[in-house]
Image (cartoon, rainbow, N blue to C red; front, side):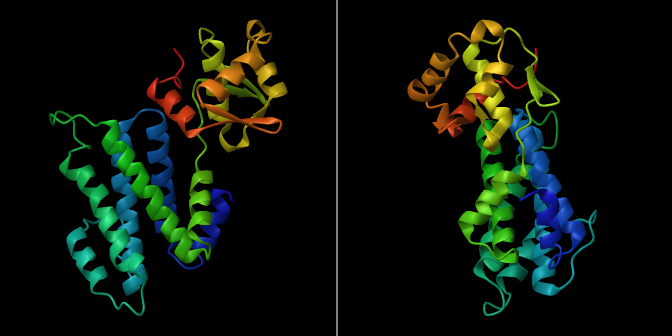
Amino acid sequence: MDVATLKSQLTTVLPSELVDELIAAHKEAKREFYLGGLRLSAVEGGRFCEAAFRLLEFIVEGSYLPLGQHLDTERIIRRMQNAAGDAHSDAVRLHIPRSLRLVYDIRNKRNAAHLGDGIDPNLQDATLVISVIDWVLAEFIRLYHNVNADQASRIVDGLVTKAAPIIQDFDGFLKVLDPTLGAADYCLVLLYHRGKQGATFGELESWVQPRMRSNLRRTLRRLDNDKAFIHRNGARYYITRTGDLDVESRHLLEPE
């Protein structure tokens, strides 16, 4: 499902400006996380929370504090907790508000938005923020798009394309902008960029440098069997979660 379709379906029930803000903040937080912008991913996580708290207000009370005005999150959490249990799910009353507060505290009390604070953002904080906002968005989709939890999670996974700045697309030809990369890393960044679409051997063979082609099958077998960084499914190759983490941790996405 694409973003436009999801928005159109959620906005039949929820305010469009909040849905737009929620999805935009989620997209930017994920993008910054993929590119190593740990501080900015926490900042966008805070922006996501401000939209999500207002959605909870709307769901329970029918109105919400306008965007741009200061939120009293503790008060909202108390109001959600006191909402009628027979009218609203525990996700709305308890689980989502408490999860948002965790991200909001990382955004504010760990001072992710302020320089010179003596606290450096780190992967642990950013990973927590991303995991929570993924879950919260999936819960809103589950509740207001009439799908189960697994389907909602898959929709969230498909919303964000892990676009790699190191790759430029020329009418379907993917060019890696760092010619110094070895064959394995070359394949990894290509498959990272392709995400759930994956790539065939023929596509990879056409995109890698000529010097890499004679040993390409061996390179792919090592990435698959020895590293578990990729997975072959029929005629297509896909990057795995461990492959994603390897690409991100070694900062392979930015061209030199």
